[in-house]
Length: 388
Ligand code: CMX
Image 1 (cartoon, rainbow, N blue to C red):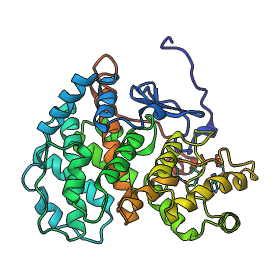
Image 2: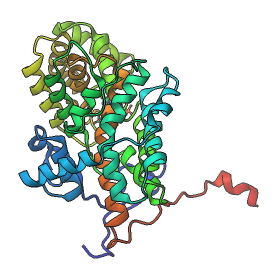
Image 3: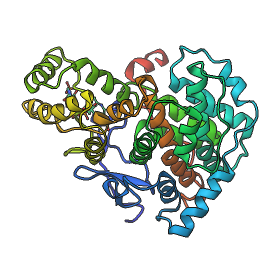
């Protein structure tokens, strides 16, 4: 495509729409199609879902999957970057316990930057990815007040293993917990260039703020209930249904629509089929928790809600989205407090956003990087009045 080719016709109807659908750049890590959902570096997510999270991080940064040798070298590299700088725990110890975990995560990332940032896009992105498992584990421990006997960070473990080792929950099946979290991470790592948190992270980085400040900004964006926090709301919604009787579930769905409340876990801005990330999680649920009460509810919801939502022609996609099952699976493995669910989303997204920041800062425009973001806002008549 030549520089002068037109790819979009802009009209006044596009103003004040949150830039919905307006092309602003290219993305090297992922894209989303209406039929197959997100693809990472060309691979549909359904093909990547059972891979090691470390291999998928490698893919997002290197644009190719690692061979076994590269995979093991990369795991060693992440382990060598894993140590948290001194001082992180005393910051966490001072935070208000009632604060939302996403606020803790944002502050935690800022703290990692203040204490251990090196001022290089790729180095900082890699260090942050390597330090996230321990940081997130410590956030759980300090916020829950479980600060006695925190195991030391066993860096010989996988990223997920380091998190669950720090969390150190008893009476849980750790291998199933690791499997659910690993799948969750892979499914949530990236979702195109224009979603709010990714866009925010890249916008902050475009002013040459650090990777850590950019990522903390991205996490703040992710924490909104219309964005990442939807997965917390989704599980709260499933809990509220309280039945897996199909007729009662249908009555509940109709009641929510009549009350003009969203039916959580359904619908999508781009997809026009069931999100493959939901399909993968349903398959995992059938394997690990087919008899779980909440799983039974979402299994019925998956049948009932699309039929009811299809009655409204305004709804472009009545099918299940990624958030339908993730909370149910996290709850099943012992992560019972939905307030934490978006922090897993944030942990995963650090990989995709980190890779996109590195691309925008060091690869785009032949390595010069994308310039500072500066979209145009047009003065409204009212704001011009005082000039007369
Ligand atoms: N429940 C109720 N109403 C819905 C709906 C749902 N699940 N999905 C769409 N609609 C409504 C929209 O609110 C919109 O109504 P208005 O015209 O009154 O504003 C209308 O149907 C058309 O919406 P759309 O073009 O089909 O979808 P949007 O791009 O506007 O919205 C989304 C997409 C996800 C915000 C919406 O489907 C929704 O609110 N879903 C429920 C919340 C949810 O599960 N969020 C998680 C999203 C996960 C993800 O993005 O991956």
